[in-house]
Amino acid sequence: MLPRSQLARAFRSFSSTACNHAHVSNIGKKPITFPETVRLMRLKNSVTVIGPLGTATVPLEHYMHLVFDNPNTFTLNIEDTEVKKQREMWGLTRTLINNAIVGMTEGFNVPLYLVGVGYRAALEEDPRGTEDGGSGQRLNMKLGYSHSVLVPIPPHIKAEVPIPTKIILSCTDKEKLGLFAARVRKWRKPEPYKGKGIFIGKEQIRIKNVKKK
Image (cartoon, rainbow, N blue to C red; front, side, top):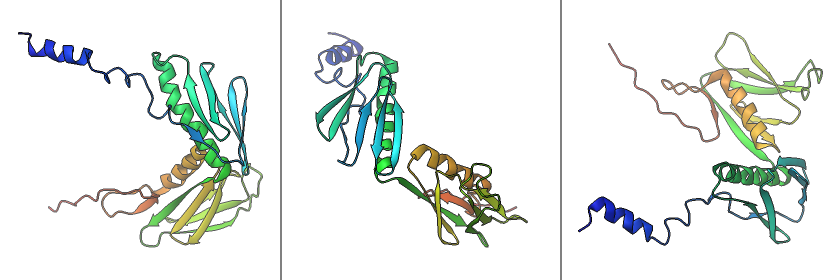
């Protein structure tokens, strides 16, 4: 009788599914559907997405190919799924292309919540205007400091303050939106004792109990 370890290897070698999914990206293989308002231009080393909200370009490696199954659906394929580098870039590039399509049609937005006594925000004109490459607006936030926190808004970001404790940021680029939201959050990161701070979206933290002496 074979030892248990050898039996396990034997069963794996005869498995019909063990090798089928070993070198396939579950994200990369998903088809991408885009609306009729979007046009795709395949260039030598990139793909350009043209939509109602603007234009975005995503770089493509030489081993990547776009296969159009029908006029509004395509799949991103790579030449060799056995190559680790190609598999890693497969899912990432597919995500970037899909984000570019969403950004150029719907855009992205994220809410920020100011939690704390006296915490509030206001949207106001930036006295510097667009001199430093800004949009001419800035956020004026009260975050428990002895001074107001002033954050200029970049031209690619749109900000709204529907209520003093909520900021809504919008952008066609998901990465740039996340970077600016993190920049605002950095001024008062959520702390785990009283639960105060700037929260992004549905962000939650675990409140710690203060040990009494």
